[in-house]
Amino acid sequence: KPLAVATDINLHAPALLPQDYCGDVHLRLSFYKKLASAKNADQLERLVEEIVDRFGKLPPAAQNLIEVHRLRVLAERYGVLKIDAAPTHILITFRPQPPIDPMRIIELIQKNRHIKLAGNERLKIERALPDPAARAQLARDVLRSLGQPLEATTA
Image (cartoon, rainbow, N blue to C red; front, top):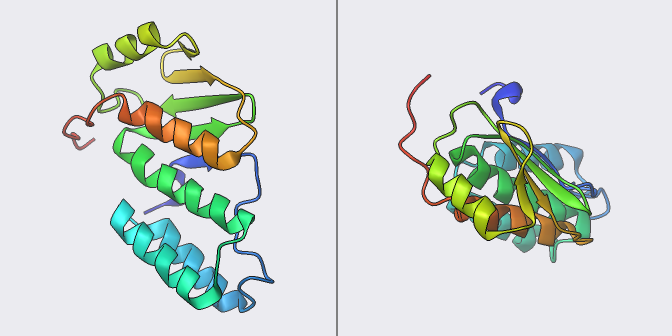
């Protein structure tokens, strides 16, 4: 799968396995590859368990890395191209014709004053959240509030 196809997630915080946590560069690269190729939440959680078993409690940068991948796994199902989760707002950019019922997006915007359309394919969530994990959780909650993704049609 080309990198250009993957959902781009930016939590505006360091998201990595620090060298002092996992010292072997080849092992780190192996875990990065496994995390990037995880297709669902179960695979991801098994990897997190393996990492914690081997190296101990996740440091903040590693927690952010896991949050990025949790968000990516969910966002891909909703046709999300990019999530830019800054401390003051979150932008969610969908691909054209995402597998979402348009009425769910309209309902979401009508019920939540802090969520707005920003162009044809973007949602802007205006909420100040200094914690990267809280930003990732809010983005996941917003996506889930759109209901189950519709059956994907092959392009």
